[in-house]
Image 1: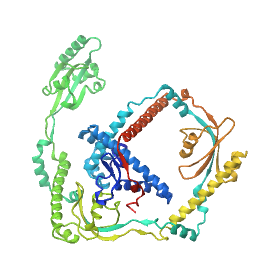
Image 2 (image 1 turned 180 degrees about the vertical axis):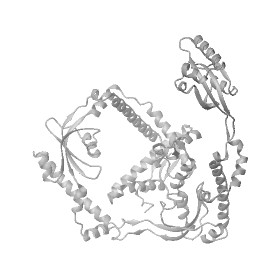
Image 3 (image 1 turned 60 degrees about the vertical axis):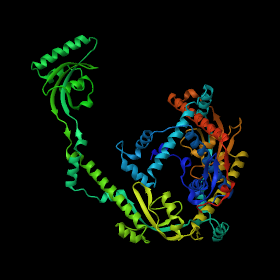
Length: 618
């Protein structure tokens, strides 16, 4: 969903609003605003999910990740508090325009409310919370744009930037296939066992809960509702005043443009009016004299029009005439018109079939709303009298369903709904077997739950993680072997061997000497970035360096020459785009500096204990 560069405000700005249920304390304080331990852990777990493919990471690296996340949360809090105190005001219309402009909520370019609420259901978000997040995002965006608008780039900076942008480098590349080598590595059973035993706190499956639930959904209720023809007809008769169509008229005209002599144009239009009234075929006169190229060949036919479609003197004339009447000259911004009114289609209520779908939808919505509220009251009342969810289902006529494997980060069928997570892991529900209160997931969806089984955190068996450990050990050993080969390869180059010969000796794939630019798509992006970050080689020497590819392979490259960029060789459109890019980067740097200044003026307290604390979700 493209809302989603704008519409999806980063989690770090908002997080989840209520973490008190965990009693986890605070991770940082920014003036009088606390960042909870749960906020930190939630963002940290999200980051670890993205890094899970790399296997187990060193403890010091994990601490560094968590510290970086906390600093990001602090910066986001600084900005959030600053825009609130600075009086940034976002009205409802701006938020509405942002959401309704998102393509994922549209059909044929038109906003569809049902698509919006379906998406909120699928992502387990409350509409009011989501819209508040968008409001906050717009505030932050206004601050960023305000600072970015003051950024400027000097001509010298711009030319230097173009020189760098247009710079080319002559390079040879040797690539080592890590995955292919990893497949040849044999991992013994004792290696797997040793790896597993050395990490007693790893390979943990999270605590999970199985629970029964009754779910009440407005859309499901609506699908089951049938509207009779009698109900529809009665509602149509009550609603006819809402569905009126405007009067329509069909007319023809002859346009005589002003050209250089307005008086002559008016005189000619008056003469044509007289000829048409005298009985000459209006269509023939239009084809011969009208300067309206769009209608003259059709005898001046303007088609069927509403008055709102033709404002001004011409429309006023057409909608004041009698059927068959000819008028002229009528002056407009284009010239003088001779007009004939051919027919009038009176306004009035739209036919039932034209509004059937809309009326039927309204009746279903009305009935579903009433049934939803009634069932919600039934569930609430039943909480005082029953101890079993099945009895409540019989009372309400709803069905009991089962959810399994639900964790503190959520799961099917309610996603990451914090309201459901809070209810499931509430002590009275989790351990005492009580039925939860009615949980409002969003305005269209509620539920009650009763826990059936709790599964504490357990360590997976070695058999469960055998493939994972094998892959990790193969990858580690393959990378060590390749790093050794890369070292020998680099030494061979320094000893004078040719690039191709040295690469062949260590079984690397060679990309022969090529000239590359910063936008070269034929070279892996990870390698290309490292090539242009490397220092220029001294005259007569080569620069040797290495990089990981975006696909996880290992590459060694040798830069033999640097060709300076020539700004005049860059197309003008590209140069303008580069200037815009440079100004945007300058604005981003200014914004970053602004936030840093906010931090220096703020009172910030960090909890070392929060950074070292055992993860709440493990």
